Image 1: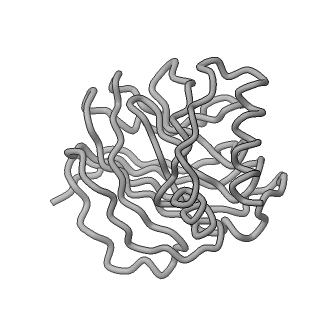
Image 2 (image 1 turned 30 degrees about the vertical axis):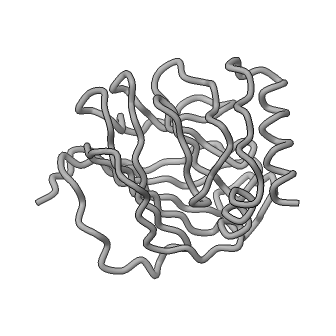
Length: 198
C-alpha cells in the first residue's frame, strides 16, 4: 500500500508556458521534445508545460514512499500522464524560471535516482498563451521512487496537449538552449513554443 509522506498545495509562477521540477542549481533546459504533450526532462530537471504563457497556476504535490495505484477515474482532469524523472542530487523541487521557489515539499526525499511522477492537468485551454494574474490552471503531481519506464497515458483531452504532441512528432528534436538562464535562453524558449503552436 502507498504511504503518503508529504502533501502541500500552492501556486507556482509559469513563464514561457512552463514550470520546472529541478535539482538545486539546474537551469539548462532539456532538448524540446514533449512527445506526451505535458512533461519532458533530462537528468536533474523536468519541464511541465502550461497553457498560459505567464502567471500563477495552482499546484498540489503528493510524495509517496511506494507506487501509487492507477487512478480509478481521471474524468476530473484534462491530461494525466505517468512519467519517469531522474534526480541527480536527491533534492528535486518545484521551481519557477523567473520567481522564487514555492513552499512545496521536496519531490525526491529518498535520495538520487529514478522516480515516477503522475502529472494531472486541467484548464490549459482556458487562457492559452495569455498573461494571467489569477490561477486558471490546476496541476497535481504524485511522486514516488520507481524504475525508469515508458510513459503511461491515462487521459489526453485538451487541445494544447494535442497540438504539442503533433508538433513533437512532425518536427526534429530541437537543440537545448545555453545553460545560463539569461535573456537569450528565455527568448529561445519562447520562440520555440510559439513556432510549435502557431
